[in-house]
Image (cartoon, rainbow, N blue to C red; front, side, top):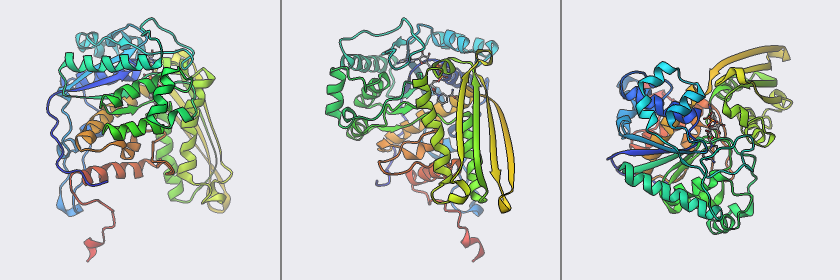
Length: 437
Ligand SMILES: NC(=O)c1ccc[n+]([C@@H]2O[C@H](COP(=O)([O-])OP(=O)(O)OC[C@H]3O[C@@H](n4cnc5c(N)ncnc54)[C@H](O)[C@@H]3O)[C@@H](O)[C@H]2O)c1
């Protein structure tokens, strides 16, 4: 792809639409409002706190990312969404229990004004929840057209100049890519005939993309990871990215595993167990939804450690992931990792990681960065899969035939080099010979 020319300025308001207004979505919305009122800090957000080095180490040029690239300002963001429950964003946030009531009280009127639109939902795809706020339609195509109407109405009524959609809905059951996903025409036919391989998240994605709205997929569902949607993204000049926000245990894995590999330490096994008690945990009790999540979590180590290249070090590794729903924990998950590594002459060692993490606290800044970067990408004329946003995902999307890059540090370098490339700055290779000439 050619380097973008001049990037259009972020004029006017940016509307952010989330299918799913649960823990992640409302923690994100509440957080943005707390930050823009000066009541809190956007910890964990690269767009808000990150800096980027430009030129040589001796040049002393390290602007903030948000001063370097023309991102939308937080004050220009507006929020909307869909959910199967009628709770407004305040009620939903209070129910999710991520933020304490003191913090929520500071933004209660703001959150109470964000009311979910009626969702497109089908229990065949998310089995363990059900709710009253659901659209009716003759077939999936008609439902998708209704989402398009919602998007157009939101744009008009909130007077935004641009929109971005980020899937924050529950994890759907595992859906395999099929022929109906291969072209836009077959996809439309499949929607009209209510084909089982068309999940609700795909209807939101189709509606967004055919409305010219960038789409990020925060869950491990197939959603935009199919040729039909990718072709539409090209056609409508829409950037897309996914899948599954990289938080918690997988974040730790992609921090630790690259270190073991860089030092040529071996790995016999990695056993990961999670206990969590939020609605996400409840949905993941269903084997179908768990399988989608499991696929997403398991692939990480294979790609980072490359057992085919290093059979002696990683060829026999056992990797297990378990998720258990345990209501007393609420959103405060516990992720235990037992890591069996080996060193010089094959001598074994163990590492135990017990991460008492707050999932949605880790996910909210990801949503913020993704929507701001997708909006930037669209203004820069970038379309289709945005691999440079792999940094934020457990299962990064790539062009067909490419393996995904999971190493957090390579992902971070790729992200920052993409920003340099967009702005016409030199890429940083870390070679550094020039300092010794
Ligand atoms: N919390 C994290 O750190 C994290 C990390 C990676 C991925 N995710 C994924 O992000 C998603 C959201 O997580 P969460 O913790 O906010 O879950 P949550 O259960 O609190 O919220 C999901 C919301 O989506 C709604 N929903 C389900 N199907 C819908 C549909 N078809 N249309 C509209 N709304 C629908 C549910 O009613 C619920 O309110 C999940 O898929 C989860 O697996 C979360």
